[in-house]
Length: 172
Image (cartoon, rainbow, N blue to C red; front, top):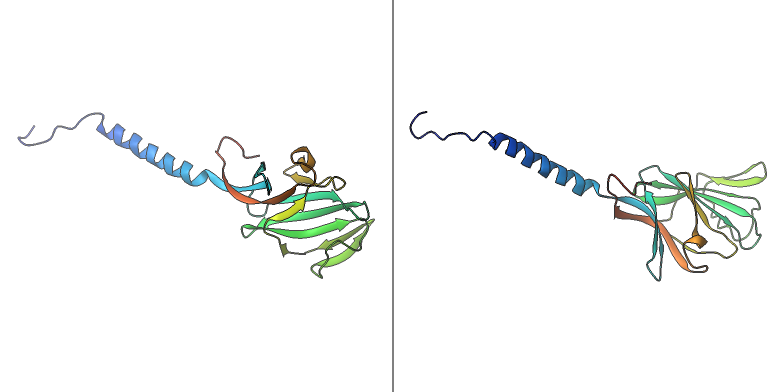
């Protein structure tokens, strides 16, 4: 060995590689841990029902019984451009109280009246958990009957929040 030369430590490259891997993993977990998540939140108490992570193009349905005609209604929502959009409404009896504002195409399909291509941005969707309405969200093949999670008549908001979703859990 030449005078003044530094003797290399045999384990130093391995320590450097492991340190870089730990830093890369921390960055990956830190950026991937918070994801858009479909949530139902009680407006007063803050109690939440986490339905799972949501990605661009994901959809869910809100099924309920209309309080006036006591017949089923199905609303179809899509997550796009980081917001919720009402895309379709289906009902057995089209009439007063259904909120048709000239958006989309109204057509009859069998026994259902359908309004397609509504593309109505709703942001967070406020609703009262119905005693008659039996509000049920259908998301990723699973049904969530809101009265099973929240007090009837309580005001809840269905929306998207950034929540911690570890890669190994709560991906629903």
